[in-house]
Structure formats: structure tokens, C-alpha cells
Length: 264
Image (tube, rainbow, N blue to C red; front, side, top):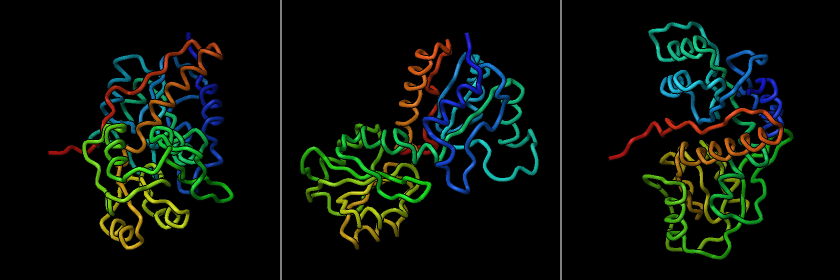
């Protein structure tokens, strides 16, 4: 049995409405035919040559990625380049790709809500809102906790190889703000909202310096580390929705998924 890709697109637009995307973003069905059917769906953070090959070898009809496989203008598709070989593989094996990016970041139940749940935050609310976007989250710990103890918990919970942070880890914290991916720019919002700790990814040196100046801890869970939890959650939700709707399609997490960073 299989489900039409258009039906999966409809469900994805309910889970992560396209209207929530930022102006520069490129979510949606980026490769493939919405009229085609999918018997096997794979959820991943990034579309790579490795998972494209896995998809081809294992009968994956649809890849749902967080990061768009097409971003910006394409001026050529040469198969002697990484992207060209990737697009060629996907098209040759008729592997469709749907991406949900900033719309999944903002969506309730998306990247940031899943991360907040993994970190056991309570009374979670948006960190910053605009007319079209709901960015980041802020919530409370069950009780005041020494920052070093919470950082140790977070490192284990998110299976992080390292967890860089800046600030005084001996102090007690209670309010935690977060935004998955690269969102150090929301540090000011986190501080203004009364957060004791701000968790994000891709933190630069001067971001850390700014946090120290403001007296707020900042922790860099990594781009991959802060976003990969939503991949597992989304695959689980789609599998459940598929059962309820009688899709007959299997939904799995990309077994090849890993951070591009390695550590000594």
C-alpha cells in the first residue's frame, strides 16, 4: 500500500504551515511529482548523497528534510559536482523531496517545542513573535538548578559530543530560552525575557562575549544537536497519522543521519 505524495504534503502543511516560512526560505515539495505514490517515507535533517543512495537501495519514495535541498538559484546541474550528482540520483530513482524549514521552526509542535520537551521545560511560550512567525521558546525548569548540572543533563539527553557554553555555570538557573539551529541573534530577546540560560546552535565567539557581558549563560548545542530531535518526533507523528488515515506507508528516520562535524 502507498499514499499519494499530495496527501503527505497536505498533512505536512497542517503540521508546519507554509505561511510560517520566512521570506528568504524555500520549503515545500522541491523534487518530485505530487501525484506520485509513496510506500516508504524517510525523515532527515539534510539531504545528502549518502541518504539519497540509501533511499535508492531501500525503496524510499519520499524524503522529508528539515533543510531545503534546493536553496537559492541553480545555474547548472553538473553531475561532476556534489549537488549535481545528488539531484541526478534523486531524479533517476524518482525519490521525491519535501522540505519543512523555518515553518517547522515556528510551528507549534515543531523544532523548538520538541527541543523544549526534551529539556523538560514547563510553561513553555514563544520567545519572540511577529505577524507571521513564532520564534524560539522560553520556559521554566521544574526547580532551580545549578547551571552545570543542567548542562550535564542536556549534553547527555541530546547525545552531544561536546557542549560549549559561556557564563557562570555555578549559578542557579530557572528560566531557559532556546531556539534550534543558528539563532544566537535572539540572545537579546532571551535576556529581555528574563532567561537565565539561552540554548541555541552555531554560537560565535562574540556571541559568547555578549552573553557574558549581559550576565546570561549561553550554550551551543550545535545546529545538528538542537534540531535532530524534531526528526525523530516528526517521523513518529507521521507514522501515527498514517495509521489513523490508512496510508499503508512506512515512515522511518534516516539511519545515515549524522552531524557534519567530527571531534578528536
